[in-house]
Length: 383
Image 1 (spheres, helix red, strand yellow):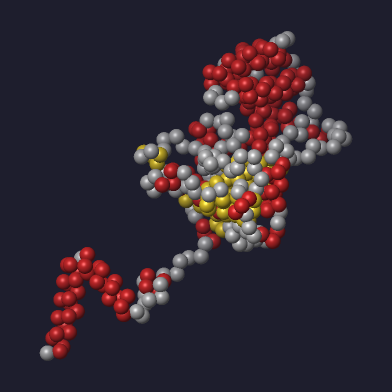
Image 2 (cartoon, helix red, strand yellow):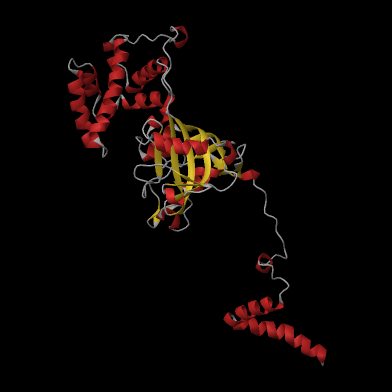
């Protein structure tokens, strides 16, 4: 297809054609998704004319940087210089598409690639759970509650604190998520590991809250017959219902494995021991951040220490032991249960006397009724 004919295409028509081209390159799913969106940033934030002027410019590099810098400065609060380079790389790929004259070679008919495929890097994400003032406000339910249960569809979904979002570029790595909670100063208790992790498309941090929430709604997850959206619908923020909904899931995992016994990680070597593992870090675990990324190429020492724990089979259950809500055992009700059974004092007369004295002291009316109904009857019989 001639470029002039491409220019006549609508936004969706052109993107559809470009997506086929991206798939023909054998790119990862996350790379295709990101490039499919980010290549058209100037069109979305500027205009169709601006987009075509830039990608067909004879001085492409200079013109593209200039226009991206303008658009990002007006529409983004992130590191503009870094973002310019990212969006520029996607525009370069789109120009490759143009140079192919739009003639797509079916994947099955292309020549076999003989070069050795690149090694997919590995990344460990520490996801800190049950933290922050959000959980102490009203009756809020933490979004991370889903991490240790299966959804009704039988799959494990993971929420990444603190917003449930992530840059899709992390999907180019093989991800393992360690679910932890604060135990003591500089020490975290490991609750589980999530393996075979894939990023959900709508968890893309570059999407708007509305787009992320809509993707969550369309996924239609339920837990115990209750939709995930309804489960958190009454959560509040700073005293009022949350108006800006977000994504409540970030990943889908092949399996979530719990430790056989309690294990901990620390960045303080002096407190390490038999079941507490020291993790080498440059600056220690972040005090504020609720998630930390350890890529084997960028933080090899930290990755090696964490990976040693992950791969130690003796530390972990053999299979995924998480359950769906419907699989949980039903609570057995004991009509004769009372809290004295818990402390094994149900036959202690003094314990009963002290308990009755406490309640009668704070409720004199109850004592009066008790005395009238119990003791009056006893006096009559005695007479």
